[in-house]
Length: 452
Image 1: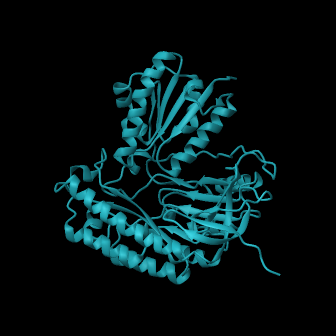
Image 2: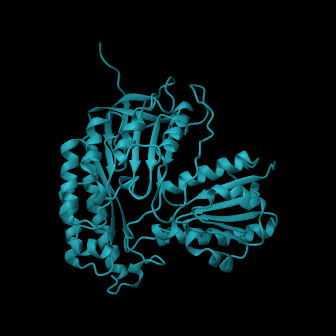
Image 3: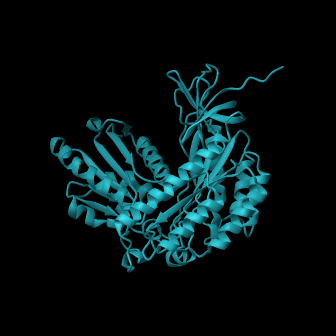
C-alpha cells in the first residue's frame, strides 16, 4: 500500500468527469490519498478533452506550468489521460518530456498497474474494437441527514463508450474508439449500488445513448433491447428520484424513446438534442445523417409527447463552406425551435478528422460575428423562457444548503437560488419552490408553503 497523494484535473465533458471518478476510486483503493492542492500531490493526472482546440490548448498550457513544478519536486509523477492522450500518444512525451505516463481512454482501469510498473515515459493508448467495458461498482459510503458530502445525491453512470457515426469534424471515434455498450446487468447493478449509497439522481452517459445496444450484444437481456427499455428498467429502482441522460443523435431518436418522457415520472423533462447546423448543405458536409426537416419532425414529436419539455442543443458556426445563407438557415431554426439554451462554438480543425482537409474555410472574423449574433439571439430566447417560470411553483432538488446559501435545480436543469434558508433540507431533497425572479442563467425563489 502507498500513502502518496494524487490530484486529478478534469477538462471537458461529463464522460471525462465520470472517468476521473473511476480513476480516483481505483487509486484510493490502492492506498493513494486524494488532495486538492498541487503542492501536496505526488501524482498529478490531467484528464483531457480534444473535442475543441481550446480545451487542448488549456492542457498544453498547464503541462508547461507543471514542467517548472516538477523541477522543484523531482519525484512528482505527471500523467496525461483522456482524449488528448489517446490522440497524441507518444507525441506528448516528445513535446513534454517531463510527462511520465500517457493513458488512453480504454486504459483508465489499468491506471494502478501502469503506475506500479512505470518505465520512463510509458504510453498506453491501444484502442480495441472488441473492447469490453469492465464491470465497475462505485465505492460510496451510505449518506444520510448528517452527511458532509453535498455531491453524493447526484452521479453519472456510463452505459456506453465510443461512436460509430464519424461526423466529419469529430474526433470521438478516433479518441474513444468504436461504439461499445455495457451489459444491462452491469448497468443495473451499478445503478442499484448508487441508490443504495444515497444517490437521488442518475444521469446515464454515452456519446450516443440512443443507439445503446445496437452495435454489440447486450448480454442476458431480451433480443432487441433498446435504450428506452434501459430507461424504464433504471427508473423502476426504488429510491431513485430523478433520471437524466446525455447525449443523443437525432438520427437514432425513436418514438419509443420519446414516449418515455410521457410515461416515466422521474425522467426529467429536459432533453439535449444536438443539431449543429440548420442548413442541409452543412449537415451533409458534417456527415450528420439527418436533414433539417427530419430534425424538426423529431422536435414536433417530442413536444407532442411532452409539451413542457425543455430543449437544448449544440451548434457549430463557421463550418468549412458555410455560406451566409447556410448560417441564416441556422438562425431560422433557432427561431422555429426556440431552444431553452444552447452550447455554440466556432468551428476549429481537429487532428485526424476529414473536415480538417476541407477547403473553403470560413474566416475567423466571420465566424466570430456569426457566433456573437447566434448567442445574442439565444440569450434573448432563453430569458423569455426563464421569465415564464416566475410566479409558478416547481419541485426542485436541493444541491447545496450551507454557509447561508441554498441552491436547488429544476427538472428542466435550471439553478434556483433561495432567499430563505431551511435547516431541515439536505442535498437530494425535493422541495416545492415559488419562483420569484428570472435571470439569464438561473432563477431565484423561495420555499413554497402550502396553505391550509
